[in-house]
Length: 323
Image (cartoon, rainbow, N blue to C red):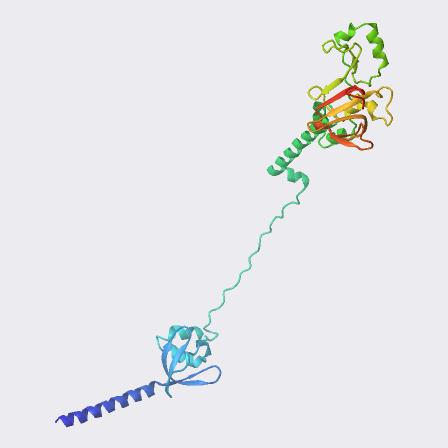
């Protein structure tokens, strides 16, 4: 009985294997590609990239892209509900089934008004333009004030003209020469000199004085020196403005190549925080500097900045030793 059962089981297993092989052979189909080749087998795996087939000859094929199948093979695979979503996008529809493209409606484009060409006046009509114009106007007034100081003109008059005639007013004053400055009046004789007597007065006439220098004769009663001695004239920055006009008008005699009789026996001593220079000749002047030839310096020229001059002393040449 047991041998009979084992024999029946073997026969059933053989029949089952035969049925499975026949079923697999029945499912194997032909799939054609666009290049003319074909594949015999069944679909084993698939995704968006393509399909892998179990070949009828055994083994598996490489992954075949959906775009390589012909239309008949795609339609065949689209009959399977699992393969349809992947195969259907590659199936070409007949012309009568294709959706008609939407009609393109060309609408009229409205015309854009081009902005007007910008001009100088339109620029200043904007807030930023007005702000820039205000800055330029203030700069014009400041320029007028600085030019008034440089040309020694009344600052109020120059600023008023600059306000009425922007740019033009400052240019007019800048092109005009500087105002003439009067030389400082000579200092009044000291009370001691007024009461000195005829002998002191006679001695004073023999010593020449520079024009506008204020050099005077006085009796030095406090130091006990002899009557009639010439006292130095001291110009201090706290009392005078040392600029080009002041130097040229007050010490004009020192600008000559050969000293005249009025300054022949006088020496100009210029003191700055850094040095002290004694000279009998001012060689040249600029708006900010004066150049002098120091005594005993030969032809050497010394530059002195007007802004650094602290004191100018006009004294006799033989004071502190004849130089």
